Amino acid sequence: MEKTNGRRVILFPLPLQGCINPMIQLAKILHSRGFSITVIHTRFNAPKASSHPLFTFLQIPDGLSEAETRTRDVTLLITLLNQRCESPFRECLTKLFAESETEEEKQRTSCLIDDSNWLFTQSVAESFNLPRFVLCTYKFTFFLGHLLVPQLRREGFLPFPDSEAEDLVPVFPPLRKKDLSRIMRNSRQSELLDSYLQKILETTKRASGIIVMSCEELDRDSLAESNEVFTFPIFPIGPSHIHDVQASSSSLFEPDQSCIPWLDKRETRSVTYVSLGSIVTISESELLEIACGLSNTNLSFLWVVRPGSVHGRDWIESLPQGFIESLDEKGKIVKWAPQKEVLAHRAIGGFLTHNGWNSTVESICEGVPMISLPFAWDQMLNARFVSDVWRIGIHLEGRIERREIERAVRRLMLGSEGEGIRERINALRDEVRRSVQRGGSSSRYLDDLVDRILSF
Ligand code: UDX
Image (cartoon, rainbow, N blue to C red; front, side, top):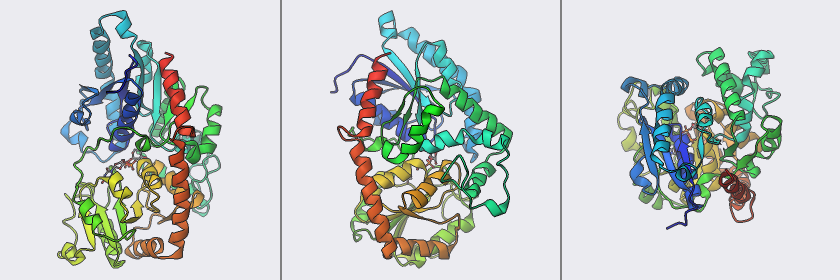
């Protein structure tokens, strides 16, 4: 049993897998430092309370219909959640504080920690005199950079001519202009996006600090620039999953554990792991190109195809008849994998990824070289860091074609190029892992964060 410090922290994750994982991990870290944890969450994508018996979970209604929960438009989903969750969230806090009977007990709640995409929480927290920290689940370079998009548009950077597609975006390197246009293309209406980003900037500026799931070793430049935008402290406490806390899953889907005995039978560094995270969707023809590309390498692969991630299909039924049988023992397709365990397995030699920030740091922390296939939003920037800055992966440049995929996998898994990439990612892995050890930069920032929360 951990020693408690008599303080409670309230967490309110955005209900997306990539945001729930780091938030629950942060809860475990703070719990190990003596804080009581209360997680307020929506009905949609509710975290599994039974996996975390030491935390209190409070569910609020989110007003989403069944059809709305199935939308593939994440911007729309976040907009609806922001419109419908404010009152339930406020009522939940009112009830929570009313139930704390004495003034002393009320004061035991130190702060609220929630996602930058919640637009109403700052005002609600202020009305309860509750300090609020923003949890940044992106690479911090993206967090700072994406808040500049409205300004870039005002200054006429968007749109730009095709001839400039490969050029760097001036205030947002190493992002290229073609990457920025893909980020923008996915937004339904640029004006809506701009006002949404403006609101994130305004509300974040009123917070007490930002907790970043990154470290100085990965984000040095942007952390140094942060004081031009924010006047409060930033706490890059490192990739949350490598802190030494109790292991428990915050997965919304059931991971297929048969991956592990299957990997046990494979040679060291012989398998390419393929996963496009929890949000990306692809067309039937893209599914087929990936399938043929992987199978044509004649190398082993473990591929996660999330149910519902192929347009108009339940799963992989559109692959040609006999495809699965033809793979024999060479390839395995699952609906969801225990990703962190998979990446840590000695049999994994490469990761074909969409470069969500969690997947990117999980890969770095295990020294697994990447093939980058980003689709949208922060993934575009993470992929540039992987290929152009850290040089720990190969960029597919959006080409979902069987020959390109086959070539990239072979380059990474067989060639001398792959060896160089592996050496660089192992060096980066060691630096990042050192940062969370006693005396490391992330460990010191975590101590500062705990002191700051206790000071309220
Ligand atoms: C997206 C963004 O790209 C991300 O940067 C942002 O912070 C949240 O939204 P997502 O598509 O969920 O995220 O990708 P990622 O950030 O990589 O998170 C996926 C998580 O699901 C990872 O923690 C990964 O380990 C886990 N996962 C994925 C599994 O456990 N099993 C799987 O089969 C696939």
